[in-house]
Length: 228
Image 1: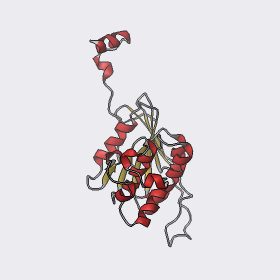
Image 2: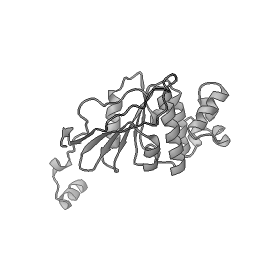
Image 3: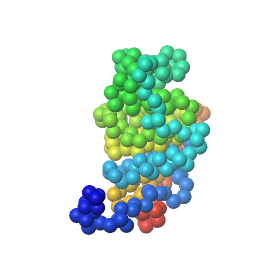
Image 4: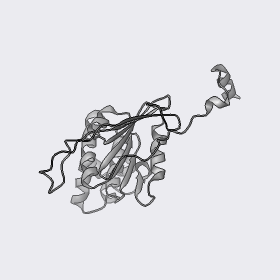
């Protein structure tokens, strides 16, 4: 009854409550070693679209960051695979190099530290398709930017596919995504292919000239209909 009263106050009926799922027509122009970033205001459908991409990925190769458990009875250093030196290296790369955090339990870390811990676990999981919602939103600008820079390197060097949704502008800029999907509250979707000329070339290819890739913009509305 209260919901119906709110609808009457705003002049809505049941048909107005229907919002089409934020879909993208066709396949995404992304390959291993690249990053796809979904941006837009809160409520624009970033998480829903990210979840759709997750459902399309191979079950054996995908990992949603927030699905990584936060143990209460095991210390961080014991949860990260590999030798102590390898574990410390990946923890430092993801911004979790504080010794007291490393000796703490994942479930007792701060929200920002928990995000970095899950990212470290994800990068060691041997999963190729990683999905991160609210990327950098629980971190300060400097930490988020540093973390994004490290992820950019790790994704490229290990030929991973990294999908992220974020409204953190500094983190998004440092992440240097190869593909940006912009959402708005009207249901429009704009796909932008980025240029990343400054990326490091793989071993043996230093003499090759940088690849010039054209920027392609496509805008969709509603259920993936092309409008511009």
